[in-house]
Length: 381
Image (cartoon, rainbow, N blue to C red; front, side):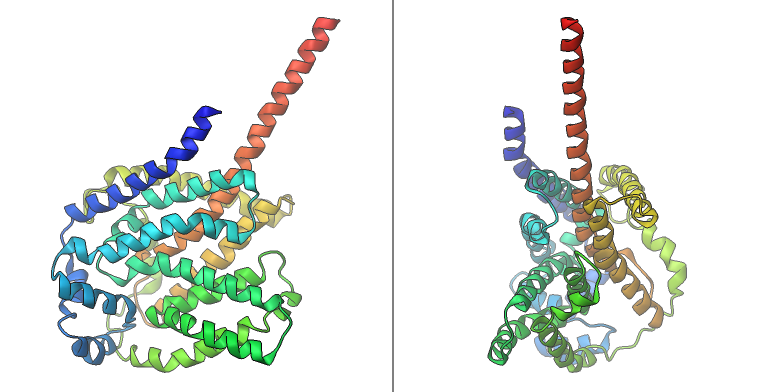
């Protein structure tokens, strides 16, 4: 019991130290690469960034560029300071993970610690998210954007259970529309995040038409934010894709990029890659097993169904949407684009693994108790 309490107390500290150490180490070993240097060179002036550079590149999402513009003007070409926004955002995600998990209302209290620990551990050792955390690229802030999107949608949806009044709708629109606009404009993937989380919240218990009736406040606000964002997206999407990739042929490369066990770029991730590779095999086994159970209908387990539902809405649909966008624009399907979906994936794994571990411990206790009872009966005889 004492060991368990000590582990609960110090595991967060140890994971946080590991989390920060591996990210700082990887940044220290790797120099700024060509995409980072290109972004930094675009920060010469605010006028050049907004009027010339961002509208001239495909999908010039302005959020990260504007943030880095102010950081760059204070500390130009300092890779540690320029990488600080991404690192701080991921540390914030690390601390917000328990609140995301409890907000999902899937996990019983006795399973919370295991779920949170597993999610944080996988997040800490993820090689791509480790490299992205201090990369001077827009991808570094996407995990935090997903977490913010989750809290916005779940809070907004709670208003749908209040009786409808036009005055309340106008008030909620004034409050929530600017925040959703901020997410949509920060990065185009914000739209994918908001919409897929919204579908997940609507259908997290049952996929029914009735669920759609509970959207009297949330739907008009999200839809109006979407429509207002269109002119801004059009402005920042004037640049054409000239890469002419065969998108489908890059799919195997995308999943090969999830881990790499060689000494190539980025450096400093060899031990993480091997550890993550072992974890990845385990994660894929659990995913396939639960999918088969639910498809065959042999599992009435609420956690298994929730696991599959989470992965459909929060992992599968975002992946297919990004793949479709890349295919239309003849762009490569690269893992760095969708590494942020690993956050909900790790949460779903924490959910199902905690369920299995609790069941296993109960089985062990039951077996031990049955053995003791049989031993007592045998002695009395």
